[in-house]
Length: 385
Image (cartoon, rainbow, N blue to C red; front, side, top):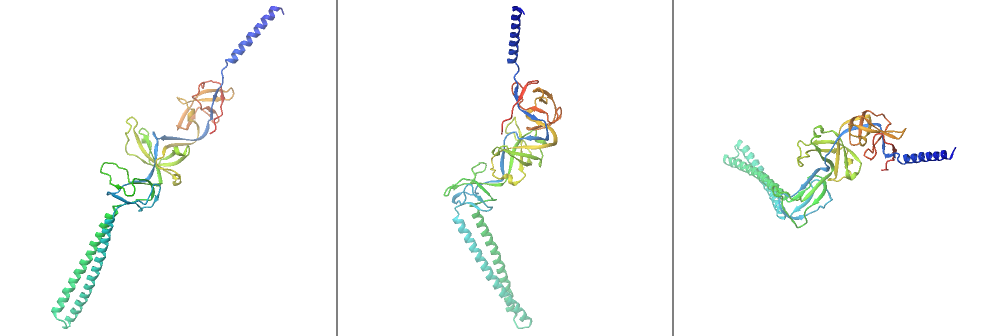
């Protein structure tokens, strides 16, 4: 080999090495992607609320007195649990208590007078009966007999009048007690005191008509809770009472609770003109789910409209527009855009009717740069939760 040939060979090899090095440097780098398997499972079609719902108590009473006055007794505090009928607070009522005592005394006096009058009637009636028998045997005069019979009738009328006076006295006691009861605020049901607006010695007044004022006592029954949530007017016609639902609360993270639709409002809320909604109410299926929950928590509901069990499904986050997915090819570490026929879908899973097979793997990180049809990829392990 001549010198020129050696030089030419060297140059050729150098060029080939440089070209190979450039191609190696410019080779497409694999894109890191997250994968999920195509699997068999359950898919539900659901409707969710448009804005956050609210956890509410089945019974809640914002109580205020029917009359005004000075608070003389306040035996409860915020957070106390009270029984039905228990006194929550009492307005000064010494005058009305005295009126009740007076009415009760008059009631006892009326009963005593009635007993006296009726005993006198019984005595007079026996005397009239005795004289009537004696007159039949010509042993008593007509005059004395008629006087005895007339006296018995008068005593009878007096007895009836005395008994009627007892009814009047009973009514007076009832009226006096009703006036006294108006000064006492009692619990209509067992529950927890959420709020007390007032202190001993302060004056309270009833709310004027049409003017909202803070309640004297806010009483909540936390033994029964439900969720009220707004549903878009477009979705509302599909929801019926007794449909199954799923409840989630921000305070409980990703934990969910089984529920059932109890009511669909018969009208549309137009608070937001461009986003009209229909309120629905959802009950918890078991009372134990109410434990450690507080009325006022924000909550979301998913009403389950339809369920397909043991069907082919994929994560909904892997679905592209026009029902397409990226299928992973383990042979050459590439992904291929593949059309599918989708069925039921929700925020978590989508049913696959055609286009995929079980155990295939698809890309879920579809928004990453470089994730395109035919891209070279490398599998990234999902972050631990």
